[in-house]
Image 1 (cartoon, helix red, strand yellow):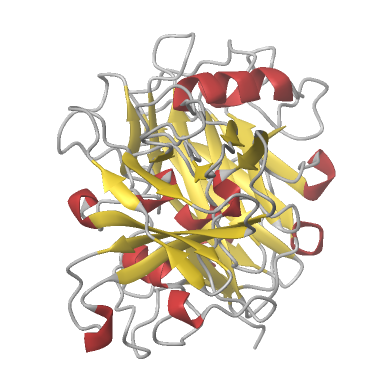
Image 2 (cartoon, one colour):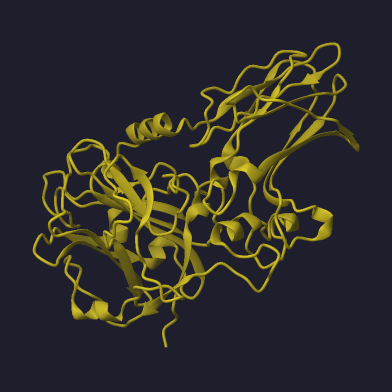
Length: 432
């Protein structure tokens, strides 16, 4: 079982230029709050957070959080709104022009020496129709706020992208982030294509069928799988066809027929994932990192909170390779079984799973991943929504993977391992 978390983290951080950056607050005779808030994400171009100098111009520097990137949101309409308050007094933040080719937001602000300040960053989408008139077409998508006391010396302020709030919860009510009060945040509704100011429009979910008989987990499609759910509420096939990574192997308009289906018996969730077809199979298992080989990613969020970061409670990411470390068809119970956890996930354990794969390299066949997941161990409830995404990694020539597809994440970015908000929604049908 591969558990090289340090290597995975290093690889991901190198690829995405992600990570917490150091910010400092400086003081002079007249305190100048100059916070380079470089929130680096997969789509950021900057390589460092910058430095703070007393009374230095362009002290505020912001990069758009990666979780805001989506084909459903026009990048040119996403803007930052920054304010600094000292008590009841708001101090003006001056926005500055960024250098040519630099997409960061820059600004500067001055406050009196020794002040206790509150810094607030709102990311909004502009030009949104059907909003209350007082919002001026601006829809709040994400909020960050920090209190900084005693601006009187150079010191550091660590800001991480996970500190953004994107949902309103009972513990932390943010009605401005859930405009229509339907329990789904504005950002989630935009990502799902539903109206953030229309409580009658809620994000769709896949209702996973109940069946009392369990399939045998051997990597084959038996008649019990005829009772599984292979379509969503709108009767659309559950295709894994959203391209997240392409190193020149994905042909425009091609249909690889990657798809998934599921059912449950109240105790276990059963998943079947179809991979490469006969004549197109290129199975590889030569990498230390499971996701660099042919493998599936299973993401789930037990309470469907779908925040901007993994919460350490019930957000999971499991990676099941097609091949074992010895090149055989992967399955639990083998001495060389491979199962891995994502970098930000609660660690997954093989005791939660039973799985088997089939290389199935014969006419009219596809590779198969058959998975059994313990609902209690996975914190997945029955008849309550939970987050879910199924993704497929493909290595065509050995070494690093060459392509990746998702069922739900449509951002074009391989970032569900960082942002639970990318997951879709499923619900287990109650027993009759």
